[in-house]
Image (cartoon, rainbow, N blue to C red; front, side, top):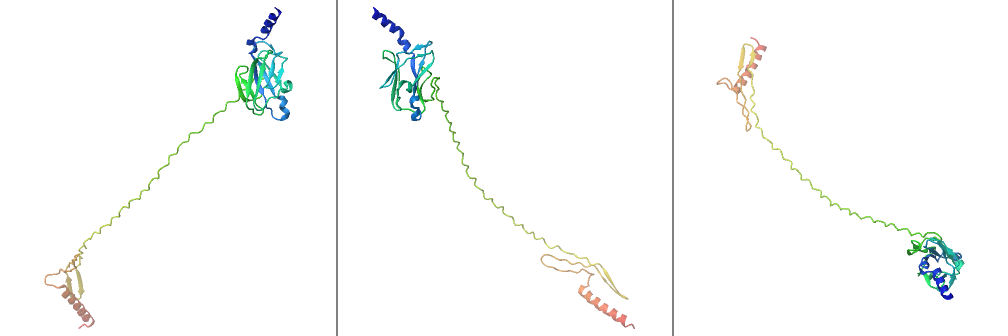
Length: 252
């Protein structure tokens, strides 16, 4: 009977539904520098609305175990360093587990490689999956890495190549050769005024004469009184003029 009561008491103290709510929340296994190795830690998170006694629970890797003696507050974090547990977390592959007092695995996490000064974190705390290369947040809410903003690549704009414009050779405008108009030589008709030559008692009267010139040939015609030749008249005038001078210089 006493044995049955003891089993019932253990069942009430560590119900599976309660144990499942205490989880590994963050693992920091690769701090920079050999002197920082003691700062490695395993963080637990209590998802319950009440405090929970972890006495008798264990943290273990593949070769070593550490028994816990602590109480974790409701919706709180509790971390255990390498200096506390003496469990050295490998920088390469490793598995870390949380065991209940009966040795049953309550929660477990494994990794194959690490990044210096980065953690493995559940996001959101207590319920999400593990994300690698997160910021170290011991005793605080885990932080998701920033989502990289994709860089939009500009769409290349094709610049149309302009076709060279052909230079048109100007057409020379023919210069028209002016036509020379042959103007017929006007017929000049000089008007000979009548002249009277005084020679004392003698006088000669020359009537109007007309001279005509044409483009093909020049001809002169002298119009005088009928029966009078211009040449003869000229000679007569010369003779007459000489006679007048003679008689003036030699009077009777």
